[in-house]
Length: 159
Image (cartoon, rainbow, N blue to C red; front, side, top):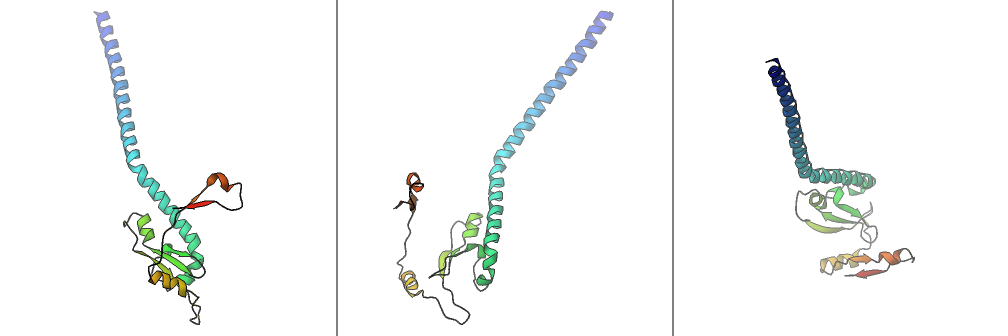
C-alpha cells in the first residue's frame, strides 16, 4: 500500500512539473508570436516616425539661417529651397505634407523672385517669361557610377 501511495505522489509531482513546463512553453510561444506580430505591424510606423523626426531636424538646421529671408513668404519654410541667382527660392508647396503622408500630392511648384530692401528686383525676366509661357520641363540625370571616380566631371545621361 505504501508503494502505491509513493508511486501516486511521484506520478502526481511528475505530472505537475510536466504540466508547468508545457504551459510555460506554450505561454512563451504565444507571447513571442504576439510580439513578432506587433513588431511587424508597427515597424513601418516606427521607421516613418524616425525618418520624419530626422527630416524635421535637418530642415531646422538648414532653415534657421534663412528664417529672416522667408518672413513674408506664405509657404511652409520646410517647403522652400534656396537657389540663388536668378531665382532666389523655389517652393515645393505641400512637399512636407506629402513626405509626412498627410496629403498625396504637391499643391504646386513656385519660383520666388527676391527684391532687396529698396525694392530692386533681381534680373529674373527671362525665367519669369518661361514660367508664364509654360516653357518648363523635367530632366532626370543618371550618373554613371563607374566613371565618376576616374574623371573630374560626371558623365550623365538624360531621360
